[in-house]
Length: 273
Image: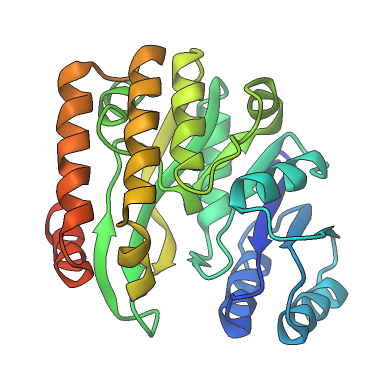
């Protein structure tokens, strides 16, 4: 079957684990449908161990392997924008540098693209693991159809970010990722939905997502809360949500900020997945 050409975009910074990056890239290369291009954005200077992993895969990958180097760490949003500018194809698949794509992830998404040519972005489900890939502890499920995704976006991000494939032309038209250190993906989906573009999710699990205790620490703190509250008000004014959904989300995030990281970890597993 003839599928659209596509690129895979991975951003990486110095604190990443080289073996995790190796597993992430390998899961891209070992797909049932291999990308035409892999883009690695080095978000600032990397360790020699990370450079070795990238170079190993650059030499072995048979298609285009593009490396983009940023002089300093700029954050995932700006690093992703640099990758988008270097993408050779209209469709771009995002991949986190410590996650593992299922072997048929891209084949599933490309079939969905052919079935839904009007879609600007296509995501899927994720299973979350700790330590070994087989140690699945939770699953983050997102809605499938456009209407449900729009409703879901009032409260939470409607796309599992490490699973998404999107149209480069649409993302560039929307101004690409905002210059944010948090929630830049959620912000992009809101811009896409309020501009009238269609987002869908497939029911299949596309990515095994690595979870560490640092995740729950990052989701707390007053800096994160301030950005979240500010963005929720911005999104309401753009057309996602109303005062009730905004205040409900804000109240939940205030509680999330105040509770200890250990309790936050339990809350995410029990109620937010």
